[in-house]
Image (cartoon, rainbow, N blue to C red; front, side, top):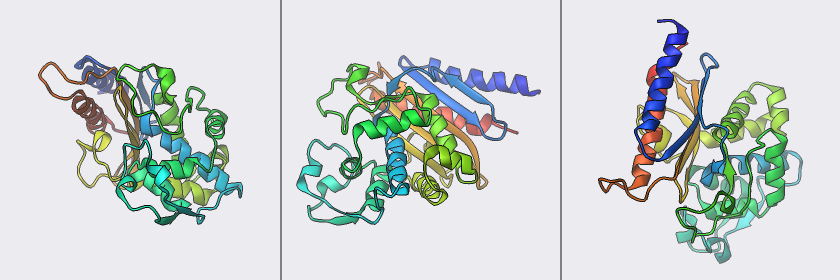
Amino acid sequence: MNRTTTSNKTAERLNAICDAQPFVTRYCIRNLLTGETFDRGAQEETPSASTRKTSIMMAALKAVGDGRLDLNEPIVYEPRFAEEVASGLFRYLTPGIVIPLRDAITGMMVLSDNVCTKMVFERLTLEEVDRYCKSIGMIRTHHRFLIPPLALSPDHALGAVTTTTAADQLMLLQTILDAQTSKAAAAKLGCPPALCQFALQTLKNQVLRYGIHSRLPFETKVASKGGRGKRGRMDAGIVYRGGAPFYIIAAYTDQVPQAMPNGTPGYTVSLETIGRLSRACWDEFQA
């Protein structure tokens, strides 16, 4: 089977997974063995949910590289950080704990802890993070809020949340990956190589195993950040195989119903859809 035939077969399988559901699924996927990219609605604006945190992390690391922030800076967990927060562990802990900025970034990424997100974001500005995204080419990513309001309805407008595109997220992950060996990629991110290494390792430390991870062999290493929004679920990450980067996938579900016709929660099926897309890549991709 030649490459064109194989590529068409892969695209058909990916799109069939999306077509089987009544909600919108957008994705941008790159086979890192060949460089071939598959996409569906990849340039369309969509709620980012917590996938936005990868760009927040990179903006913070740039500020560290510039000397404006210090990864060792101590941060006191104050009660105000737990207000209007619906994710993570810290909201259940006793205020007064002191952690360094480094650990706040880690908590924001590996447990999607929004107390930690507030700790990190308080040392930046919304405009700074948004400007950072635009400067590295994420032109369709728009940071609009520190923490999205808890009372959002499932049919909220795009302008009510931070939005991104699957293509923007793939580009960011590709650049972080390239920055492990490329000075040009590290310069694009505005971070010295050591901080680019920290960023990739933090993504690899992800402990939540839904979405991209869910249908892969348990020991598979994935450097990723997922998200939970009122309109859908999303996940973006670099999948490794045999110790080497295998593919990058950024998948976003949208307009997901609260319940499917058979009563299954919509979010369950949206996460399964992302898992199926990832498994299709695992099965289909070859050099």
